[in-house]
Amino acid sequence: MSDQVSIEWPRQDVRAIWAQIERAQKELGRDLGQAIRFAAWSVARSLGVVTKVAPKYRDYKVVKEGRGVAKRAGSKLYEVTSWKKGREHTFKTRAASVAELKTKPQVKISNAGRAKSAWMWGIKKLGSGGGVSMKGVTSKGFKVAQNSMDVEQKLTGDNPYVKIINSLPYAVSALKGGMGSINDAMGKAARSMARIINADIKKKLGAK
Image (cartoon, rainbow, N blue to C red; front, side):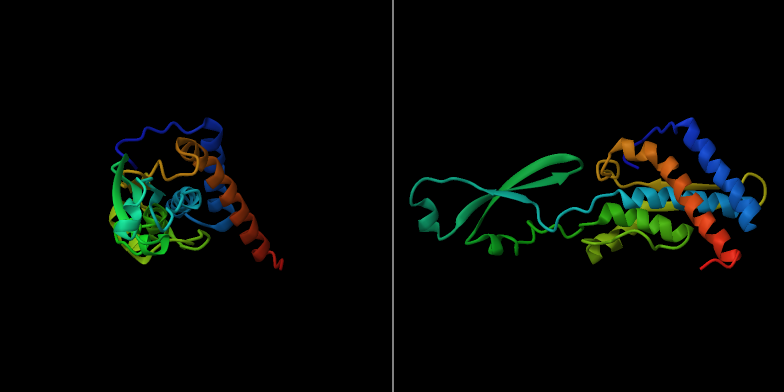
């Protein structure tokens, strides 16, 4: 996740997720490795849910010019804002209308949804990819995001583990709650696991 992010999970959330890992073993018959993978999937999913999708176009505004300038040029001057490596950049371009402005490649955000898609790639490597809305995500954003997510897992033998590595530079800033979303992820994942386990138990008991 961005450069290096140090996370200290709230103790009560850590205890809560371990309680669900134990339930997954006892009540669903999963081994420890499978239960840990379930927990990692839940954490990644909770972060994917709260990750924002960029708009289709960069922010822009009309630049006021002297009388007759825009008329002679046959267009308006726009200032467009872009972000590179977390820093704001602006550039100017001309267009006859907003509709024409939005056709310019430098104004379109072709990788919209890359941050959310990165989590989705991690989620899919750990289990089902359902439950996370991908509204607004572009096909290019989804495709290139694969290179920003890596999942390392050892689910058998002693000390099974899952390691999720999100190398996208703006992964934290793309979260709706910033670092707060990361701190809340463990607790949300535990609650999500509890709901899924409860639903599976009901199915086993024949509930509809």
